[in-house]
Length: 220
Length: 220
DNA sequence: ATTTATTTTTAGATTAATCTAATATTATTT
DNA sequence: AAATAATATTAGATTAATCTAAAAATAAAT
Ligand SMILES: [Mn+2]
Ligand SMILES: [Mn+2]
Ligand SMILES: [Mn+2]
Ligand SMILES: [Mn+2]
Image (cartoon, rainbow over all chains, first blue to last red; front, side):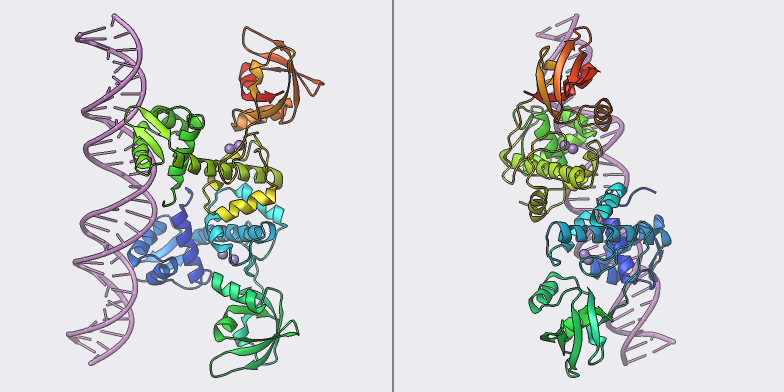
């Protein structure tokens, strides 16, 4: 099994994520949108990934990631998230600055490097956005988590992850004072527009929009 | 100025190194040999780099790196060497294991990343092989250095760099006990084969071959 | 059940990077 | 100075990854 190109790794990651870790079939157009490319390019790449048995592809029917593909995708995801931890923990980047750089670093090929990096970082289990880091075998467990938007009134929680990792969104969270580990209590829910009032760490009263509520994930 | 491809960066680095930092013209064949590729591929790439004004290329006459090209090459070299320091100092790699990985890492594009990495490492001036690390402006100073082979008998020195960074050579140095910072005294020189006897740190008597003597650089 | 719209694939081009084989240029030797 | 050898460039293919436009398949609407 020859090693994958950057493009192939990126496609595999997209298929993995869009299928929710391999559960559903994924459409050509959804991949094109996710990767900001054209459907024609996707079809072509799917044919090639299929020849390498990284995906199960039936023309016009959608694509599923194979076991082999899932293993490869999870290693790329592992690298991405470990590098993000490195950037935040060691190089003092903010969590909104690390994604693009990790997109590059995730393609560095050296199992030993990743093993050493993992050691250096103390085997972190989650990245700066609360996403779980797969181990060498692709295994990981996620924290149970639910969007703030779905928490019932007066419900408590702890922020454990963000769904969107867009830089603007993360900067907004910084500005209003929401961070991983923050304690939340939903004090009011507005039916009309999905916005809500929450209490952060028992002291900061915040009004957050539906968009924010849907993209902040809490556990309790 | 659009950013350079990995291939372009690698060619630029080769031209820079082979020309001894831009002093001489470089031949097509020497680049082909250095990069383990074919002369035809080199000609093609030189034409393209020339269009981008990264090199001054006269067909059949050889190539010189331009000022623009030198700046680009030095930034890649800076990244390569900083990453090597990171791998050795922080991830506990041995100096013979870092080159291939740095060959990949040197192409990551993020000025901020390199600035932060440099901070994190404490602004090192030399890499694990004793090579100087250019600053953000491409400036650096090398230690005065001479191959052990050229040191006269009974001459003292300190090992400051290695000319060859091949893994086998570095492992050999590890085995016989030569390392950066070691104190050397030439105790005997054999005309016949260029080998010599040296005293390391005033206590270890070593016989070293011409090959070793030519690739260990000392200062005094 | 047709027709229409949407989605997906294929056909044909393009660009970067590589190769082999053929040609051209420059250097070296008679 | 001509012949030969060494070096370098071009011509023509190939592969990966992308694109636009055309064709094919599937889904939705009449
Ligand atoms: Mn990310
Ligand atoms: Mn992340
Ligand atoms: Mn190196
Ligand atoms: Mn080095």
